[in-house]
Length: 175
Image 1: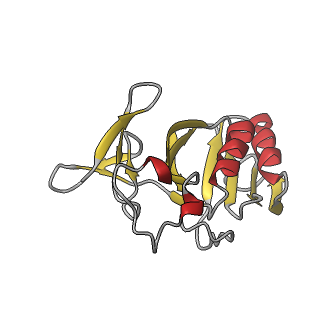
Image 2: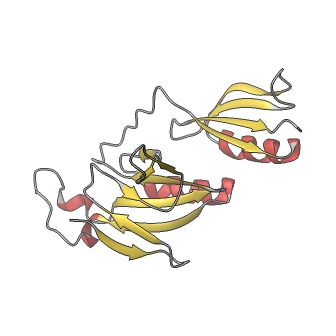
């Protein structure tokens, strides 16, 4: 059964089972039957979620909208899935970068992340902003493609941050 909490701005964040994630008022679409649907990335940092949230707040200006630790769960955990050492780890978090809400967790706290087959893309209005975000994400990470002019953007680049997430930074083409 989901329960609701409110973030600092009063926006409801529905918290459901760990495998289902957190639904917020972010990226919505309407289904063929007219109901709302939410599509949001859910990132599992395997024990480093607090560190990742701090990194994104500092480098991207992210805002944490909701955070719940395993010890704060209203329902008891299966001891085979959640060990006592995980009590202070992040069970669910929701943070905003720009207008996008991203979900995060420490997951099973294995200590090794495996982010493959996707990237997060940020589109900004100016080359200066692209430089700032790219450099912040590159801190402790690895540049996959340096920022430069392309046929589709005045400035585009790709960087894998220190948690293993591939980011694409792009300046919006003036229309």
